[in-house]
Image 1 (cartoon, helix red, strand yellow):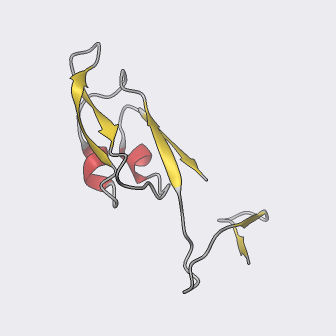
Image 2 (spheres, rainbow, N blue to C red; image 1 turned 90 degrees about the vertical axis):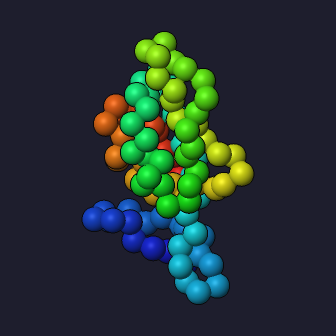
Length: 92
C-alpha cells in the first residue's frame, strides 16, 4: 500500500501492521563530543531508547547513549529537542 509523504508529491512504500498503522523503524547516531548532558532527548523519547551514559567526553560531560534492548521508531523527537545538534536520526 502506498502512502503519500508529508506535503510532497513523492510516494514512499511503508510497512503497515494488521490495523493499517504505520510501523516506523530507525536508528540514531549520537556525537558524544557535542553532547552536554542536558538529557532533553531522554525525556522526549517515547520508547526510552536513550539513556544516560557513564563515559565522559572531552568537555567533561557524560554524554547520553543508546539502549540496545529497546527499539528506535525513527520519530526524530530527540534530534529536534537536542540544543547541540548531537543526534542524527536515520529511518529504515
